Length: 178
Image (cartoon, rainbow, N blue to C red; front, side, top):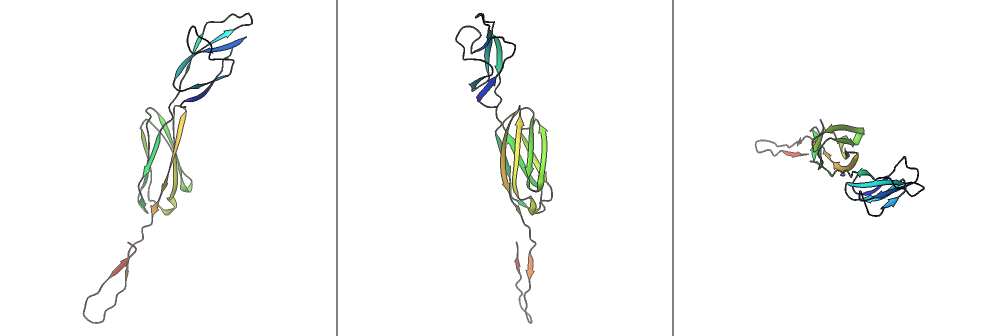
């Protein structure tokens, strides 16, 4: 996943395995099995087997595929108690991918889709749903994780405070909790 060290192995050689960057000519980029090389993009290497008499076999191609690491973004808006809590994760990769979610109160969800975004919805939000939500997006054997802190805001109904008046006149009502 992504550029970096790749370890390659070969079997069936009674002798020395040689690894090359070209199908013919050149000098080996390494010998032995396993062999570790730093790769920055999908590449083809070639291996051969040299026996005890110094006879080298024809080279066989080995394609080293570098799968991209998914970029993951996650977004949410502030939520009020009783509303639907919705969180969206997006990625840059096409093809099939799996979104694995976790959050407060033991919340988990897993979705496999070809979409580049995935939204989870928790209906009837409660204050207990406040906290850190995590999504891991996996594709082609590679994965990446993003987190977001979500706040569920309390919805306290307004209360009218008593006002008194003796005789005719105006009454002023005050409300709090809005």
